[in-house]
Length: 295
Image 1 (cartoon, rainbow, N blue to C red):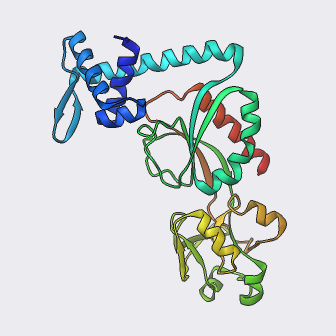
Image 2 (cartoon, rainbow, N blue to C red; image 1 turned 90 degrees about the vertical axis):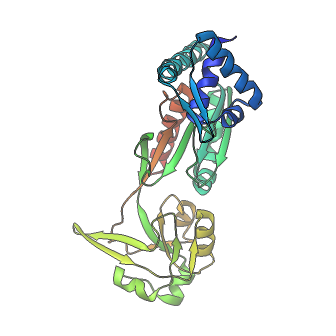
Image 3 (cartoon, one colour; image 1 turned 60 degrees about the vertical axis):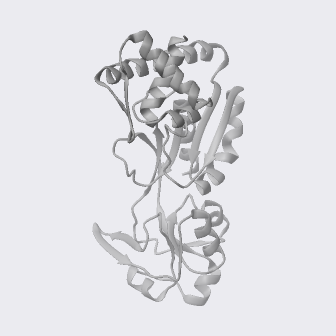
């Protein structure tokens, strides 16, 4: 039995909570995972997992083994990366998850230089607006926007930008430009349900002036928000990142610039309970430098 491979299988079973999820992560069949765990328990002469109709639960011995096995895997991976990296840069596969619009606009166009710096590295980029389970989907690093809903995540803030109220010149030519939050009551807003919804928390001179806006269009994806605004259907609140190109060329314009909104944060998120890999840390550094240039 390959002891390190067996430990890795056991760690994935505990982290994902099932043989089937661990099998998907390892790209092997579920019977192979079950057999490996059985062989591991036989070799150690101890029960590591309790099986029930409600799932798998590690025993006390299983928890102790899990902690040490996870550290051993992390140290082995770091040793490999250090040895290989000294001669050839980062290598292997790097699985990244990012929001669809942010990834399309700010990550995909800039992957070339990162790949050129690391010719032995392959990137698997998942564009998904959902907060997926990083362990179950085998993600090395996720780029997430806004407040993190799970305080237990291993995360690092790598960038920040303003949030603004924007619309097209055509929309404002027809409806006028709002000068203060109270003016928004006469406007059509495109509501982004994942980006603050209908509550817009304006601030001025250290005081908060929250308003509830109304609109006939609500969308749960940034791509839909962009298309609705660019179709002159209303104004919206969004990060400067979302409309960076259109703001630069005047296709959309900012209004109420003397009123502040909470900034939008960008986080690099890593699988909980694991040491971030060297390639994940390197990519986080790369994106941080990239966004600093764009700000």
